[in-house]
Length: 363
Image (cartoon, rainbow, N blue to C red; front, side, top):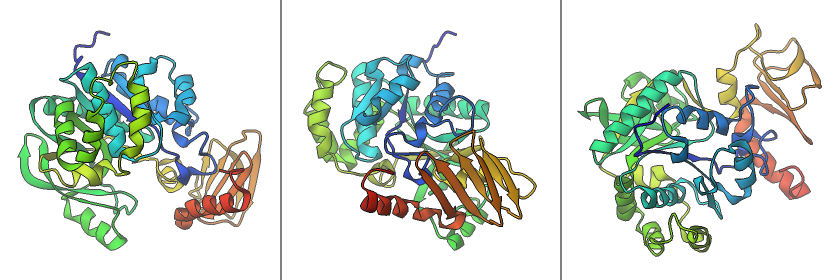
């Protein structure tokens, strides 16, 4: 298939630890590398497959922690080494996006870029690809930072929200406010107002628009990267990044730029999106039995039990469960987790406690 849109690029952020999916997701093998649905493709591979339908494979980059370089290359062998940008340390999404932007600008100073997390689910792929193409066309012709806002289907407290303004250019509304995860009362108000959308974490912009925004709002990052302008897309890039990335402040793109810039626009979308950030989000979208139990690639016999999620890493194992209501039962490797669904925010605490007690044995 001939690709005409050679100025279009994709950056997939794949460096997270995914600790909220413990014990399946471990520091050495985080969730983006897992096949969560038994499709034979990991979340990272599914994301790559999706974008490669509209963006040339050679224009797709993965930014990840250098710890995961072997996993990325194993799962996406079609990528050249220079398409896997390695962060020497964890510094949140803003430095990650700045690094990718500087690299891509050195390859193509007219690049239009879509930035995507590696662990999201999209159910209506055709709709999704249509919206991405529409967004890439918009940022090519407008000095705008675009985010995709998902029409909410419920008052969800686990997502950030975007409030759209009436001011618009075509289908793209100016963004009025960003709100981090609200409480239940506020989420209900957002849901009913019709003005608020879930923040999908998907962004589109021209490479010059985003680097200008970095210069304005996070000048310490651009000052650092400007020291090596001639190093990007060259054999010296890795050494330069290894020496300088550490000095970038740990800040998200939402907080560092999107909440401050005045040229932020939103495209309202509805393509069956889910942020697979938690066991609960997976429970919400998975098929359920007559007692509202989810068996994730697992064999289980359920008695007097409802509203549970059962995930067994060993397909030869059988779980027999009686009298449980509203629990996560996740068994993987050397850890069995049994936790109330409503308390899953404590999983990070469980990991920290296990590390204190047993060092890194169960991370």
